[in-house]
Image (cartoon, rainbow, N blue to C red; front, side, top):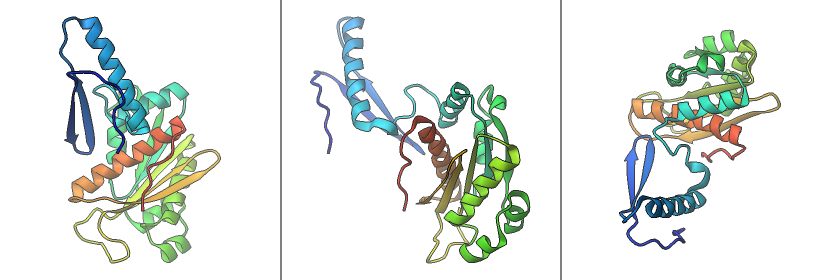
Length: 223
């Protein structure tokens, strides 16, 4: 397991699970503020080296705030197609002040019919692979990007539970898709917890996909 390589006496690291995030705190007592600040900065730099792209904020900012800021910084637009999250991603994005210049809109496509009629997901894709699949979420992401004429199209589809799962696709199975100008990406995940937790995890991971793509980082591997 990686260890901190800096040696600073009296440093206290706190680790606080705060679903669906994990918070790390760094504490140190000292005689004067400049010395304490210097040591804290040194430890923070080392933590960043170890944790890397898993850190999305060093302040009290949610994932949606970070994504909104990055979209503004890069002058890009985004649209969202949601199935299992039922509009949660759009809700999170619209909590960000000024996001209207970058979030063009979202579509909740809960049924196969709406996926086909509103986003252009092919009937053959739904019949062969099912609504919860990489193939379907890729067409959803491509379709919503085309519909809203945005730089990015983000899509999610999955089984939030507590019912609806199968042996091949158990409850918590989620597919995320991201369509850009040149590529369409997709990935499969298995989230644990109740219905609300699966939805929350899905929205968090989907927004993290956008953050990572904008940063040039790899997506977190799924299953």
